[in-house]
Each structure stands twice: as C-alpha cells, then as structure tokens.
Length: 101
Image (tube, rainbow, N blue to C red):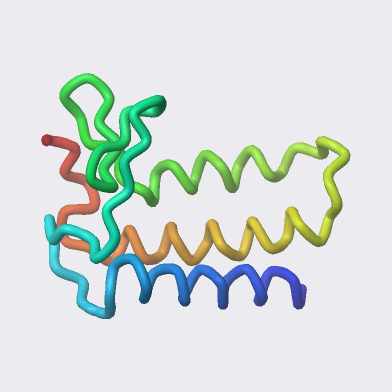
C-alpha cells in the first residue's frame, strides 16, 4: 500500500510540474513533449483525427498492470498509484470526453 501512495505522490508532483495547478480545458501544458514514434506532438497524442486523453492512456496502463508479468510488485504498485493520479487528474477537466482535435 505504501508504494501505491508513493506512486500517487510522484503523480501529483508530475501533474504540478507539467500541467500546473489550474484545470483549464484545452490549456497547453507547461512542458511540451514531442515523441513522433507514438504520435505525440506538443504533449498531445493524436491518432487519426482524435485526441487521446492521458486519462484514457493511463486507464489502459492501469488495466495492463493487473496482469502478472513477473515484474517487481513494488514497482507495479508505484505505477498503479501514478496511473490513478493521472486518471483522476484527466477526468477533472471539462473536456474529458472531447476527442476532437
């Protein structure tokens, strides 16, 4: 349980550093990340013509973490805490179900 809490704390710190403490829909993050391999540009993942929100991505990661893959359970718990924080953060936004670019 303490590792889940650690993951949540890391998630909160990450949210504050990258997104700030304001929850304004469509606001650009403070730190922009580009990863062309996965379609990420300016911290937004675009697949086709749809914006894939970070809460949805972390929901998939959280579900995958339920599969026992032989990874250290402490690391999995930290990941789960981080994922829950990111899911909650993403669902706070007013545009949480708006997938249009």
